[in-house]
Picture 1 (spheres, rainbow, N blue to C red):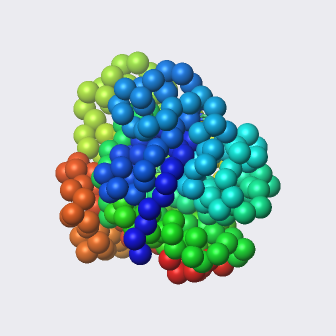
Picture 2: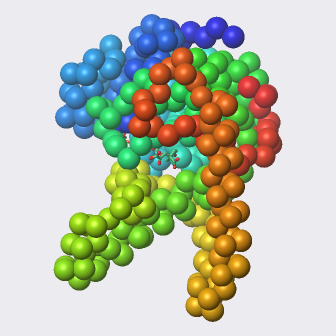
Length: 323
Ligand SMILES: NC(=O)c1ccc[n+]([C@@H]2O[C@H](COP(=O)([O-])OP(=O)(O)OC[C@H]3O[C@@H](n4cnc5c(N)ncnc54)[C@H](O)[C@@H]3O)[C@@H](O)[C@H]2O)c1
Ligand SMILES: O=C(O)C(=O)C[C@]1(C(=O)O)C=C[C@@H](O)C=C1
């Protein structure tokens, strides 16, 4: 399906918003890009990078006449933003977002969506530890999944239109139920971030001399954790505040497994340790193989970005079509 929007409004222009602006422009998917941010400095940075055509501090101004509006701010800001832009949304527009959590977004944005506007939440499973307008790059979504969570009332043709937009930026698209999304992402993304924040926090609390030794001699294992733990504090605060139940559920299972592992270490249970490490190595290899199959070479993904990861997703469509 060929896809084209007259005016794309991006509300929030950090890593994800700027990457959408660059990719949509490069692929010729939109005529006009209008950008709204909360802070003047961020808006000026976006302007100096040439990310859009219209720049404003007023989100409701940015969405006027837009046929595609994407919320790209931290999810904690969505309720107030939706309330502000709701009355200004054009009839026939698609309203979407990129938030890392989906049930909360449906709950806080849904009530502000006027009749004649279709709200189709989305989540590109792509990112880095960097933030702000200058962190974006057009290839960010290439070969990565984008999950859409349309409600049952959404017309399949509009879902397909949005899916085509993401595909044109290089993504593979999957539709699913919002609650299911939140459970899957809790274990594949949210808990791993919590673990990284925690282990780096543990080092930060060590006595000064031990800490400097850790930093001096940190090899790639700990360094990988520090990359994740450098991710945006506000964005991740909001993820844990808004996906609490799913994160606690997955953290409970994680803690049970950690206790079993702790016991295996304490009792010197070599076979148990080796059996687990063998299973986990298989998972890593299957992820890498899946990535090679779906690599989107056309988009020239930068060498330092990892290959796409096949999400552990049950193909459970939440009322939309199979876009
Ligand atoms: N970083 C990732 O890896 C990643 C990946 C997928 C999805 N997401 C989601 O994308 C969204 C944006 O994340 P990001 O990484 O681009 O963050 P970012 O910090 O780089 O950018 C966020 C931008 O939102 C704007 N903003 C912040 N508070 C605002 C407010 N109250 N009102 C209006 N605008 C506001 C600012 O323009 C800011 O630059 C989040 O909801 C996040 O969950 C992030
Ligand atoms: O690659 C990274 O740095 C990321 O953290 C990306 C990542 C992830 O956990 O995979 C982070 C948050 C998102 O909502 C989606 C993707």
